[in-house]
Length: 372
Image (cartoon, rainbow, N blue to C red; front, side, top):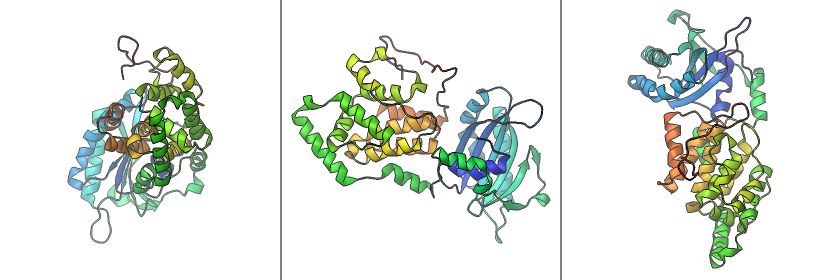
């Protein structure tokens, strides 16, 4: 995906974040690649924070420092910051409060100084993200007298926007719509699953582990809906952390933290029956998993929600990862994997990446158990 300038980046930020952005500060870290001709700047990190009051804008530095430092350390070359301030406070008459602009600019410069990056662009955004005003452009300050509001490029004029749509990246109307997507419930289906679970407790030997995981994979990857009995089996099976970990190992090989030798042979065979997730962004598959969460009893949804959170984190959808993790911990506050994910998200940790076709390995406990 190629974007020509920060104004085009601004046009597709809602698709990257997952919803229409307002009253926020968005920071994008990119890497300047040296060489002749037109410069290409790969994006390393994108983060969004709620817009604080003017006198607290300096706190953005502390909230973003760790994540930006990790992004800066992840690759060689000069690192650039593109910062977008949405809906800064205004004065009487509608003009943006100069004190808020100065505070955001000071915070941007301090963040750059403390992370070894450079402020490349700083833009103000207003009117439902339809207008922008440059405060810093290509590393140069724009004098207040020369600042003006211009239209944000239309989606139709940004080819990358169409590419993102083809990948399944769409912008929901608001953050509230993301919350609703994660928390939606189908109570009729949930009651049917609960009844099937009651029947299962009378004859637990009827639970077919391989069939249950196959049903999970067929629904998530191919869209073949499971029966109430299969939903009950899936919900019951995933309460076992080894089953959950087997699914993670199959669907997120980027984690590189579990070998077949760590699993019982029957679980290894069952996990191998899971079809792999498609590469890259997989919003359709995530939405199916969220649909499944709403079709099983709420108190059994934590493992599924944690799966969703980890998939979204690794595949670059931090917004959904945060919401799924929030709900998982709301249902089960002590669920260890969700707590680990929450710490990673709060610290802005970069997800693992496969390099050269090989996933990285983590340290392991004695006996072959994963350290995580």
